[in-house]
Length: 447
Image (cartoon, rainbow, N blue to C red):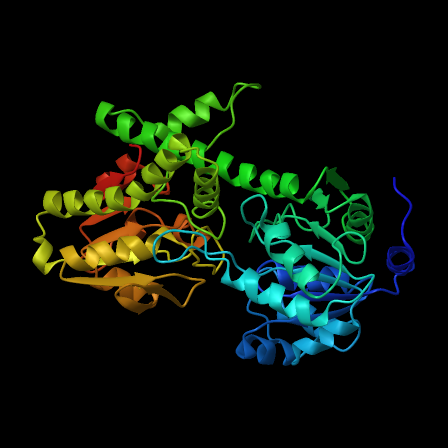
């Protein structure tokens, strides 16, 4: 490895001696858990552009499922400080950026949060500092935004300021894998940058650090991971649509195929994909690929299939109401589940939003319940969750979008509210035979 210059050597020494000060920009689902993890080894300054979030955190109130408020309170005032002024980040030896990378209204990458972070780095960067981007984006983002900011500040990336990309691998609600036991991927502007980033993450990641040749290669790793998921989910969704017409239970087929000890990885159908990664990252790659003169047909088709599952869920609902003899213009439908995955409150890109929007156009009334999420933003406004008993007593049809444990615990008899006549099951929560046995109409994805 190349010989470190003096500034990088000082920072590397501070990291190894645990005297480095680490700054985190963006205290969301990625940044907040990361800030707590680093605070066990270093002094950490956390900053979020949202003043409401800063206020909540300073009061010891967490808004992230995986960070209990009790744990946050323990760390505050010791090695963790939520700062009010972004200029305080100038004190840091290392800055890690964990901001959102959504899509704009046209479905193109919205990198405004990354740009704002780059503008901030430009103001506070100094020689010897390590700057790391964790936000998921297309290959080339780190150099395009952070590299430029460092240059604009009068420094050379790599030589004066270490620059790296290390993709977040956070899976909200996952009780098995976390920051510590999930291998970390790192790519640096040069060998020295990679060395500093590796040393920093090695202090908290027990599973090891995988070093890539450069930032773009590390960015490509994250994109591939999420496109792999999206493509395979689209495949099983399409198979579910086919098997429904054939009268074959997709869930039984996947279970049997999973007994093969090689060459198969189980994926399951559903009402669409959610979260901050799988619905968005394929479109980031598609956008970038087209800049290189390549149209990624496979990636875009997969996105279309997954998006269609929302409409398919609505179509199943309308078919269930018709079979139950309930006119759509008189029907009340309860959407059960707002979050994009079970037992968490995260509603980002949840398919529930699209399903609610479409159902609102086609039935008399839509109500919702989620045991974790209190509300969801949709194009028809913010829809608030009502108590489960209230939802079930008012609804003609229950549409289960999320497989929360609370829902899985329901018995077929327990599905019967005062007027429920039909159940739409997008997550294989219930047996068709058992639901029909208690006199309810049953429609399920992939069945």
